[in-house]
Image (cartoon, rainbow, N blue to C red):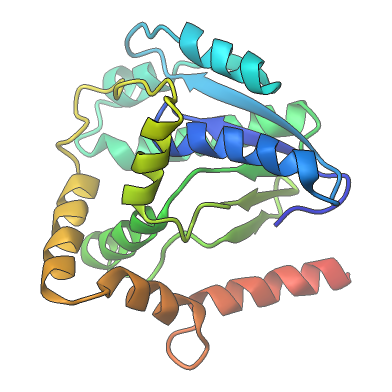
Length: 232
C-alpha cells in the first residue's frame, strides 16, 4: 500500500476509524524503512457548525499537518438537488472533493479509514440496492486523477477500532448529518449483525471469500489491474 516517496492524504471524518488511521500512519512512519509523508484533511460539508479544535490539537500532538476544507456539498445534496436518497450523491461528492484536495497538495495516495464491517456492509448494500457485486478494495487506482486510494484498516474489526480509539482517548466527533443512523447503511449494518449472530466467524469467512481466487476473487482482479499499471 505504501511505497518510497509517497505523499499520503488521510481523509478525516471525525469518526473513530479516520482518527485511528491518522495516528497509526504517524506511528508507522516512525519505524518504517519506507519513507513517506502524510497529511490529513477534513471536509466541512456546510451542514452544521462543528468544533474541530480537538482534532487540530490531536494532529499537532502527533505531528501531522491537518486542515479543514470548506465545501458546499451539504447545500448541493439537501437544498439544490433535494435528493430522496442523499447518501450516494454525498459520498460521490466527498470522494471528488477529497481527491481534488489530495492532487492540489501534491499527494499521490489517499488513505481512508474503512474497517472490516464497512467492507461487508457495502457488499450487501451494492447487492441488495444496486443489483451488483461490489465493495471496497484495499487498493484502488483512479486513472483520471492519477491517485491511488488505500484502506490500511480494511481487515480491522470495528469493535477493535472502537476499543483502541477509547483507550487512546481520540477526539471523536458526533455525526454531522441529520439522517445519520437512518440510512441504507444502517439497514445493512443491522443485516450483517443478524447474520453474524447466526453464523460463527461470519466476518472472517466473508473477508476470506473476498480475497481468495478459489471463490470469487473480487479483490484479486483489482490487484491484477494495479500490477499491470506498475509494470507499465
